[in-house]
Image 1 (cartoon, rainbow, N blue to C red):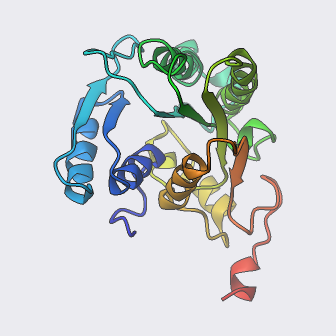
Image 2 (tube, helix red, strand yellow; image 1 turned 60 degrees about the vertical axis):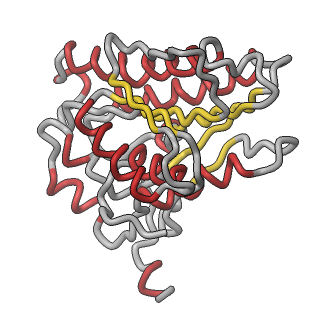
Length: 253
């Protein structure tokens, strides 16, 4: 499957990948306009045609589940970054609070809603994929990332604890960790140093969002007796966040 925008976001790509699998989608994000655009695009590739897509924009970080809807799968993805390359002590408390509210509190609100109102805690089966990042386990090489990357570490810890606390339910708690992905994420950051990012990415064939989306589908499709508990999806050239084999693509063409 080829997606038209190679710089689309990861959430966008995952929605399209599940649409192609025939899933009934309930999309939730901060922006109503973007949600509606993704829903329209998903409808155009859906199989079977004519299935339901609902959209809700986040209000006070709540997740509105109405009409007694139940869910089989939650792809829980929240990654919001502001202020780079300003270091932590140079960033505003407002920006810091916004990132924490989205990446930590909003992330947990979604999981809580799915387990309760969404019925996963009592259902015969269900899967939550918490999309974190390899940066939750490694110190990042670029400045201005303290809040964002520590929030990803928090998502990792939350996933591990949630896996324990859902003992007695049929919910699988999985973790998907993307590596370096070429999306519009960096372009959306306030004051991000594009030159510094270009230097960091030079010589690397980064992942595209579609790569992560394929992994998100594959993890869920495994038999229910099997849990892909944690999956790192990274460019082959990414040995660690600080060490890249920048000749990998040249050798493997």
